[in-house]
Image (tube, rainbow, N blue to C red; front, side, top):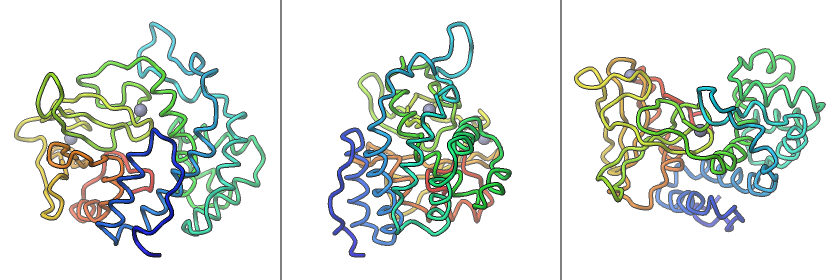
Amino acid sequence: MIPGRRQRVDVDPRWHARARRARTLIADRPHTAPLLQFYLSILEIQTGVCAAIDVSPWTSTVETPKGEGGPRLQLERLPLDTLSVGFSTFCRAIPKTAPEPVRHAAGTLAGAATEPRANLLLSMLTGEDLAPLADAFGCEIAPLAFLPRAFLSPIAETLSALAPAGATGTASVCPQCGWPPLVSRLEDESHAEGVRRLICAFCAADWTFPRAVCPACGVSGESGLEFHVDEGLAHLRIEVCKTCRRYLKSVDRRVLGFAEPLVDDLATPELDLWATEQGLDKIAPNLLGL
Ligand SMILES: [Zn+2]
Ligand SMILES: [Zn+2]
C-alpha cells in the first residue's frame, strides 16, 4: 500500500470533508494508513448502501412523542426487519482488506436470516449485551458491535439532521439520539470565542457544552478536567476527568481550521494507547473500537 496514492473514492457530499481529511492524514501520518484506508472503504460502502436508503418515511416513526422526555429520536423504533435487508448488502460489501474477524462476522451476517440480523440491529440500538448474539453467530463481539454501528450511523445522521435540533447547553448525552459524545471541538462562533461542542458518537450531531465540565460525571473545578497534550499534535489534546477517570479528545479548530474531529480521533490511536496505559476509560469508543 502506498500512502496517499489510494484512488479517490466516491463519497457522499456530506462526508467529503471527512474523506479529504482522512486522505491528508494518510499522507501526513503514514502509520495510520491501514486504519484510515479501512475507514475510507467504509465511507464508500456507507455512501453506496446507507445514503441510498430513503429514510424520509420514518422521520415521524422515530420522533419521540411530544410530552415524553429524553432525546428527540428513538431510533430503536426504526423498521429493523426492512433495514435488515440493507444490512445484509452492507455486510456483503465489506472489503477483503478488512481485519479477519470483521470479514468473518460480515460473511456470517450476510448469510443469516432476516430476523436474527434485525435482532442484532436492535441490540446495538438499545445497548444490550452482545455476548449471547456473539455465541449464537459464532463471531467475536467487537465486529458484531462494529458492523451494525457502521451500517446504522449514517442513517442516524440523516434522521438527526432532519429532526429539529434538540436542546443544547448542559446535556451530557446527545440531545438528538441519546448516545454519549465521542469527541469535543473548540471553535470561534459568531456570538462567542472558543465555544466547546461535543460531537455524538453515533449520529454526529453536535451541541454546546461548558468548557470546564466533565461530560461523563458533570464535575468541574479542581476535581474536574485536566489536559494532556502531545507535542506533535498542537490542535489536539486529551481531556481527562480527575474524578471519574474518563476521557475524550478535544480538537481545537482555532489551531487547525480543517481538522475533522471524527477523523482526527480515528487517526490518533497512540493517544488512546497512552490513556489506556494511564488506566483511563474513553467516554465512548470510536467506530473502529478505539
Ligand atoms: Zn446522536
Ligand atoms: Zn468525570
